[in-house]
Image (cartoon, rainbow, N blue to C red):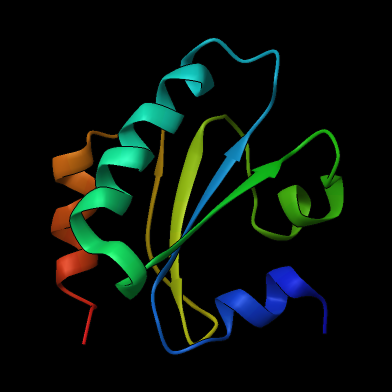
Length: 99
């Protein structure tokens, strides 16, 4: 099991930001995800996954457009959204799944 799979199989929620360096809207997500991380601290892991460098994961999770955010917990997809999401929207979905 690699590091990515180890994270998403864990007991705490993981927000994965599927992005690409050339994607304009993707450039908005780091600031939003920083706000999310500041709100929840270590109760959540946030990962960024470049779809150009990790095409197998992009295929595995059916990433058709970027940015796409997926929240995982214990290997299950709890929420997913394509396009830019607000910190409040992400926090709303995280709060439903944090212990």
